[in-house]
Image 1 (cartoon, rainbow, N blue to C red):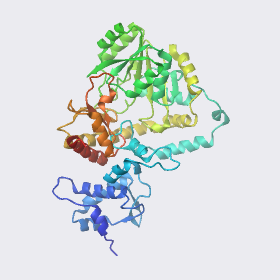
Image 2: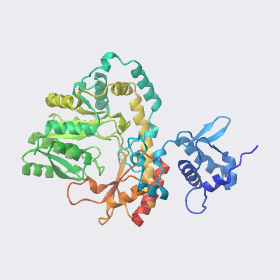
Image 3: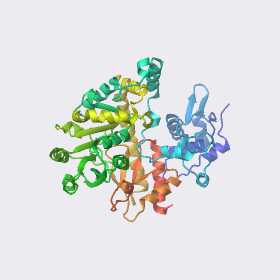
Image 4: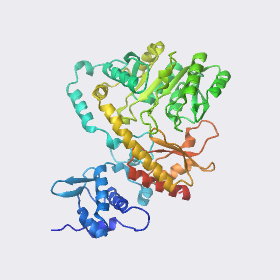
Length: 491
């Protein structure tokens, strides 16, 4: 007996020939939208590709391509001998684009009993264009789960008691080995200090290096999270302009003359946040010479240097430092998943005891279980294989975003840099209110970041930071279409 496509299903996949959108994309869009809006329910069987193609009067290849993409992304599941069904668990329940009715409900959302965050807050964390979110849908759960179970079952009394404030030795050794081979960092395991992410690392740097009233130079524009962490010790933030070669060392030297208590500088040399430029070799040498001559410290945040698309990853600034003036900060949030909450600081030997004492005062010691798991994940080669695989995935997602921006936004928005990392820096016409644009996008279920929010000074460039790491290609292309509509209509 031949399966037929229901009238409802055919209505959910409206086909418009001649509008420039490939037929397979229209089938994919219609089915995915119906699944996310619960018009097609979990476990519901779909017609065979040949049947749906006949009903829609198109090539079976177009339907087959749409099905395969939905299967690959986890919206559908195949059952041998039974057919194709809507998946029981969807990959991105919280990524649903906000419909008009959603927007009306958003004006007065009700918090579910027992929930720690409103649904809207959870959705915002995973919306398209959200920066700093990796491809959580591609995480190697099987290998990770195996390691978690292994260590949870064999957790010894020693590992259940209070631990070393510096972190588990095996993890510190694995991190040192990885950084030496992949980032050209000069370090040994006894310089590695484990913390709960880069934000904690920066707060730790502030507590050790800065006293109230001290100056700390930061890139302009720069990372707002660093601004918050470094100013927590009541230090004075001194913005230093960034150009196509990185931070302006001449301007930094002039700031040193004006601020006699300038103790440190915070930089992102491999992939400047937010503009994406890489600090040139000559600028790096000049910065290190400035730190030596002024007896100041350089805080290097190497937040997503593993992902570079136009050349091999650049070596760390710290690896060029032969004076021990660079404190190197890294995290696993972008390369694995943010909820892991594991970062690290590579501390110069002369500062080790001060950093360790401050680390212990913070929360005694870092959680042990995930450190043990992560140590094996690194030592057994899973981490390197994961990075290799993710570079290809992020390249495809970046290219999809750039294609969509070129198609839907090129007349209004200019891409500044897309050479590395998990976000693209773009600029808008000077008169554009990028904060208002971000608010309009949020009403449509998108989470861009206003470029102007990264400036300390009044002369802020207008633009958008568009994350692509956490969204599949098709979703990014659709999001750029919505972005183009918002930029032209201003909501």
